[in-house]
Length: 182
Ligand SMILES: Cc1cc2nc3c(=O)[nH]c(=O)nc-3n(C[C@H](O)[C@H](O)[C@H](O)COP(=O)(O)O)c2cc1C
Image (cartoon, rainbow, N blue to C red; front, side):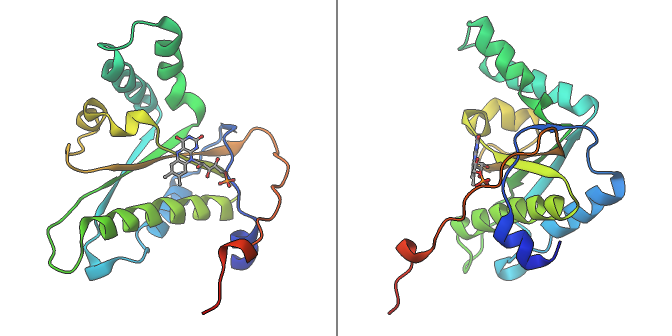
């Protein structure tokens, strides 16, 4: 797949199964994540790779994070199952740094670019992926369980794996309504 084909046809896939990217492929994906636009080269992100027993650990963290507020078993079960929607998850979080020229929102954007870059690398390798956040990404107990500082942000849970179903190609979104010429 060439670069333009990737950019013009990419789409997320939420139906993911094994195999996950191999160790070498994961290296490629993480390396792509490091190659993002980054003002002052702060590397204001962290990647937590969740696989194998890590998926169960993440599931436990999710459930414990909401257990005090939620008693509905269906919701608890749904939450427990979330990490098992893919064989590999990369949690991308920020590592905000004080910098006179680089405000926090720019650092968040860089971390977001890393999610996108890793998703694109996964697509180029023939895998599917979807970027998720949701209320758990804002939950302090989830951050604590993942060793993420409470003042940092979880930019995304990038779910990765092999598409279990070929989804129809989405229609092209036309740029005309979003572009003006000055
Ligand atoms: C920051 C961010 C957070 C997102 N969070 C979720 C989410 O929690 N759940 C979800 O189903 N999709 C989420 N999405 C959307 C999907 O990643 C995906 O972009 C969307 O389903 C549209 O599919 P497409 O990428 O094929 O256009 C999020 C996207 C972004 C950029």
